[in-house]
Length: 596
Ligand code: C2E
Ligand code: MG
Ligand code: MG
Image 1 (cartoon, rainbow, N blue to C red):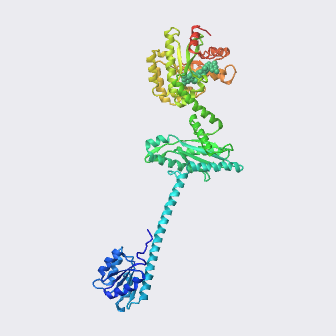
Image 2 (image 1 turned 60 degrees about the vertical axis):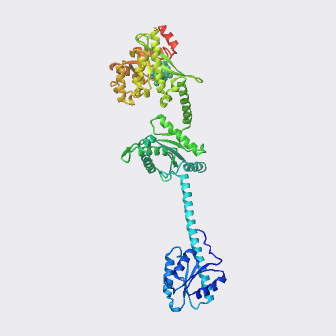
Image 3 (image 1 turned 90 degrees about the vertical axis):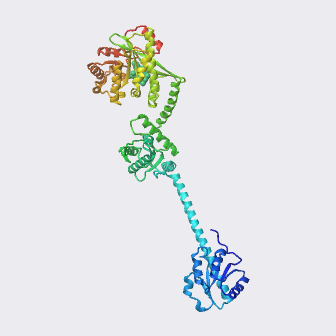
């Protein structure tokens, strides 16, 4: 609203009187003073002029024909266009003026005849000033309201901005940026306050994205809020909880002792989150992984704390078992090495950098080579020939073992048929191929194997698959089915590394396994007169009663061989006979028909 300027030099005045002489007289008082004067002889004319001219003041005669002054005033006051114009009543005779009524209908003053110039001029001046003052007040009031509104809007905008900068909209928790400020404060305290300790926990929700996608964002949001509620319940008042990523929370525990409190907290959180959430008729199960970092003087940046907590988190995922891990410096090296090997493995698969070496398996009764175990190696362009220990576990974790394993199976079967066709390998010679747990649990494993047989025309009886107990134990029901299908194809099965895992002999009889491979760690003890010595005969005894044959791995000395022969072990494998050899070498060896 603009501040109203009064039109005319001093103001616009409408004089209403049915006596022309009065009009003239009043006009003569006012015009010389600089007022603009409009005149009307009756009420109707007055109302019209008032509406079009919008005078600043009206001098209104009471005794008018048709509409009297009160009626005119009434009409002026109900019309918003004219309601604010001050009206001064004029009365010809004192008795025509009803003072009470004059004020009642909205008049501001009255002037009685005989008109005295001074009185007229003063009253007009005062009421014009009053009106101007009123307008000014109204304008100021409006301005004030507008300013207040603007101020409030700005304040709200600023507050929104601040809260957007500092907190997460969904949960109301501090966001990552704000959280790092808390961490910075904790780092500062560590350097200045003696005996101060703190820990950082990064809590990551497992499978949140999958849940969010399948149940919808609405339920996903509710789930997050539910998790926050449970996290809050675990915390003390001085702890800081923040949302640092879509499905990640940061917790700052202050004054902790060497991380023990942090691990306690991690356990508590895990327990709190595992109870199902009930969300809109869904029962949702959640689990979290937690990376823990204990603050120390070597940290300068909050981001590094979060980074290391993330590393610990990733580590807990790699290990697969424990839901929380405390960061230590070695993880960093493992971590970056892991990613480097993964990248190189992908390239290695593309470039076909893998080769198979074969280690003979000796039948102890005859002392002759009865089979070969295919063992994969990686011909790395820079690092040379790498043993499986350098890459198999990473290949398993990343799923790259699928491709490598398929290749190994095909290559080993293909190689044996080539040798058989060339007359270099006896038809009774077996080929053992290692299957990782992941491969074994692949739904299309049997299809893969069938395909290889179709391609290579290898007699299935020549193939032995080596699996570990843990591969079976991961899913015993599915394993039973796969083992049955393998049996139907007359493919033989060996239980690799027996003795170091579950060693659940009681389970064994329910699985159709042909051979047990006793792990080299037991064979290594054979000559040490160790307690474990007793275990080898025991395992062999049980295997025999269940109709299984036994292979002893890792024979390095003739001493060990003697023991095993005495124990009537069926087969044996180890450096004593031969290291794993490349294809040409192994054929040379077979061709020489060695006998041990
Ligand atoms: P494994 O199946 O138990 O294979 C036997 C391992 O013992 C081989 O190690 C072999 O070189 C080693 N070995 C043989 N004789 C002796 C001995 O007298 N003394 C000692 N100390 N060691 C001996 P390698 O080739 O390094 O393979 C290690 C493991 O990697 C294998 O253990 C197997 O679990 C895995 N692996 C090898 N090739 C494959 C593959 O193609 N697929 C899968 N999934 N795993 C494989
Ligand atoms: Mg093996
Ligand atoms: Mg083994």
